[in-house]
Image (cartoon, rainbow, N blue to C red):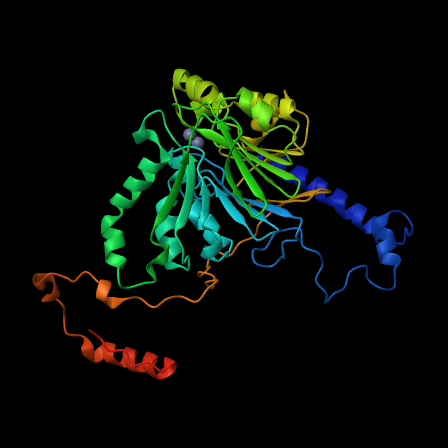
Amino acid sequence: MMSKLVAGAFVLLVALGVKFLGYSDGQAGKGFINSAFAQTAPLVSPVKARPRDSYFPNSEDLQPDEMRVIACGTGMPTARPSQAAACFLVELGNGDKFLFDLGTGSAERIAALQIPYNFLDKIFLGHLHTDHFGDLASIYVGGALAGRQKPLRVWGPSGDTAKRGTAYAMDHLQKMLTWDLDGRRGIMDERGLSIQTTEFDYKGENQVVYQENGVTIRSWPAIHSLDGPVSFGLEWNGLKFVFGSDTYPNKWFVEYAKDADLSIHECFVAVPSLIEKFKFTPQTALAVGTQIHTSPEAFGKVMSLTQPRMAVAYHFFKDFDTTAAINDRIRSTYDGPLSLAEDFMVWNVTKDDIRVRMAVVSEEVWPPPASEKPMPPDPSRRIPYSKQILDGKLDVKDVIQPIYDEINAEYGLEEKPE
Ligand SMILES: [Zn+2]
Ligand SMILES: [Zn+2]
């Protein structure tokens, strides 16, 4: 078996080699490669950069009429190295940025984009599953620590009871973080350490939930798990972005997502993969993969009914052995423009063009500069240690004092160790 493969590869290489030699062996005028060889000057410069076909964060201006959307999470509740859970960033040419869902693992993807955290203060939650808001605490606290000098603004739906609504979740998230937040008092710029929640009626049909600076965001009900989930539509400058969050195919999406420029809708792991790879029982796989969520075939049907300029499928593990089946299943019901989303996929949307690329990111990013001057902390707000804990401190002043001396000299300060 192996030797056959090796022999086959050798034959292929020989064939390629002969072909290549043929091209470079005097058959001028036959095809692009020959004409390239015939030129005296090279077609591309050996020292000038060529246009890039990847997106490198912090290297491109956003044009005034342009929308850029970046997938910061496209996978499942169990986040994995290649795919965080649901999160999409929308950047507009007017300077506004919005995060739609903030699933587990997405904060790392957002960090890789090198966007000052002051610009990442608007979050829209489609529903309150952890794979859609599990990284909220990371952006809330980590974002404030890294330069967000204003409250985090969160929009999300009510529930059928007060306890199932976004306001309850945000209130209790902050309660859960009591120790964390108290421990940061008097140590850092605290202006980012609060959440402003806007809870809206999940039953509203195409209701306006946000309208500022020429941007209108509407919500409509989604059908998923319990009452409460919603989908969103963002309109700006004649462009329309739609984000379904999670939903069973529904009539509101078909009505209000029509003619979107970019339409993101869940497309769940195919049922056979749920059984074979996720190890669900057939019964659970059918219930989750077709009833709670949208199967690839149903995703295609929704897109055929709504005809976006670009359909975006997400919420499946996109692997070498699963992608073809997802694509085939979607293509059984939809033949329009399609992106099978994965983390760091980028869409540049204008009226004339939708450019789809992958972002190439550095894993060693530090927080970008704050967009406004930071405020020094107010030490009087510190909560002191108890005497027992304080008395446990080792005396290491001899090694700390030189650090103070170094920084005081560098920055012209007179700070003293405690
Ligand atoms: Zn969900
Ligand atoms: Zn989900």
